[in-house]
Length: 354
Ligand SMILES: [Zn+2]
Image: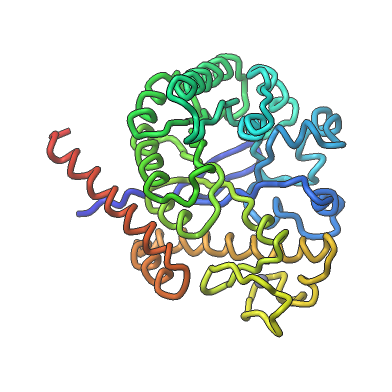
């Protein structure tokens, strides 16, 4: 009998259980949106979804930083849901700045987040080999250092690598004891499915613990990586698309652009579209952007629910094929690559007899 590469799972945290695979929306701090959500003016993403993720980089720049570190992130967000705190390594890389790994751990502990991710030094395709290997080594050292000082928080080890071999070697150098692993450095090449699938497949093969994929932008990757056994994804596409006034089509899952030129939107049954419509989304205010972001997030969350239900029925493959027929053609492209990779992996295991 063919064993599927994926399975339904549960991640237990002090603030409840996350049913996987799950999309963890990124809480972005831009445009004053964050405060309107915190003030309860609109349903917050961290209430719509099972959980949400913040970057420590954004928290440390935030006006309520002290409040977060004194009262805890759950108190500031007024939520009882699990909250993740990424180290901000990706944002610090872009700014050319760094934090001390043990300071990151300390901030994460003070924030009371449920799951923290180790500080990392992401890599990009443009780095020369020495610099790349140096950054991978430092990411491993930071992860092991944080693990050795961590007390009770769930800690995910960040994983990086530009090839499957680098991923394997990196994983071998990590100490044991992490609660899960988070694969990074995927963002700069996000549209290259071959690379994405190679790296995720290699990462999945190094561990049975929960696996998180950073910075996933669209449905083709969500389907393909769910199929390959990724447990959680973070994404801020819902809010980025809204900033560009793009509406995610509820059926085709494509981004509907130029809303201004439309007379109506495709029908949507989500909680936002029951109350609001095109004219509300087009308001040139943060309200318009928030409502559009919430519609977009609803579509992502509904699809993750559909994926979990299809897994439960043992019908994920046919579900993805069917979604590929109605809209975004990259769904098929990414899924075929994932299936091919999975099949090759099985043949290698078969031939080596392990
Ligand atoms: Zn909607």
